[in-house]
Image (cartoon, rainbow, N blue to C red; front, side):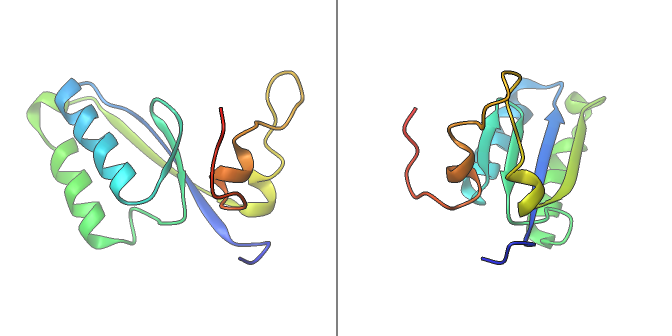
Length: 106
């Protein structure tokens, strides 16, 4: 893995619970790591992976999910490594999120 490799931070606010659950399952299946309930990090840009983009767009286009938002933020590995908690410490899961550890112990 290159030091300047790009990751993608995905954040969303889904207004319909069924859509929220389905999108969470898709994110897991696509290899994203959950940072928080609606925040993920991964190596895939959902906009450039056409089948993923189509699935997500279809779900977000559902009338029940009107008002939902979905953000994709590219972030370099070196920037992601500088992530800190409010107390100034590195999140214990950070190495797992960026693929430097195979297992996460919480």
